Length: 205
Length: 259
Image (tube, rainbow over all chains, first blue to last red; front, side, top):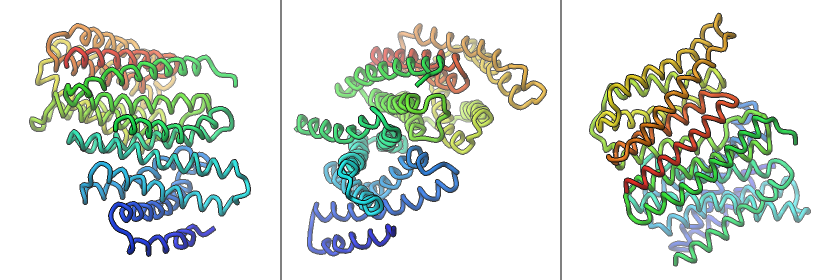
């Protein structure tokens, strides 16, 4: 399975679309493309760490992948933050775009490898894993916005915000790694968090 | 799944600490909402990171009982806890007044020795070094603050230093002197370890007047109880975690009374 080819196939029309849109939609789409690229790079790094650490692929995906994937997703968002100093909503939008792009390429690669015949598996990939990547970026962006609001965006604060997304992702991977009740709770966790966050934002407005 | 009694103790105490942390976070974040300064915000954020780490550890205990956790996501959360507390100290109590050599040397020596012992016990040298470094900075800030505010008397400071040496020396001898490796010297270290915890507990309860002194001593108690957990094994680890939970409550009470 050539993930690079999948990326090229999906990315080209989206890249061309960039020349025809403006404003927030353009930023979101660009972040989406960056997210897909970051997903590919994360896969390379994950493969390297798996061979260096001597862990099994399952243990790598449970223990190492959350850290590497969240750091890789965070880096372009951090660069955007320091270069452009966006507003709060814009920053959240770019973070979500990166997360969505990451989730999309990851799901495409999995589906092309495993196949799309098993609906429960597809639902898990879409509604759990996909939403989990979005939520981890949302939590990170909200954490950074809170620090910016109080003008305390220091190294410690950035690591603190990153730890939220890494812990969320790590918890999800750990919970779904074994069959049983914890796996079902894990599958439901991202969507439950998304609904809770949406309700909280709705209440604040 | 059959669980050992030690694992069961671990799970019970972890659940206790999680419940305490949830309460503490809600309580302290109220002060941030009431605009009572930045330290409550940093403290709440730090405790939230610790909460996520504890939840991860608890779920790991359920799913993979009695197996050692490899490097995992919760290490980042623990690192974040220490860094956020350091940032909180910088924002309020220990505003930068220039580099102080003596506190820095003390912090580096003590934490380096701890890191060396962690590496000797676990063999995980990269993560122990990387995630041990934030403790140097936190301890440095605490020592600077305590010396500036005179939060501890000279007598108390000397006593704590002697007791700390009595904790570290037996552990170091057991690890690095082959002839002493089977003498269980580390068991003797638990006595001064408990004595330091008791002294810091009493000092943090007794200090009621000066806000800065209250916070510094209670944070020192929290840091010490965290390091005590890493120095302990078996039932002693569980006991240290209970003390650590108590230290979190004391920190919350001191923040409540100082805002």
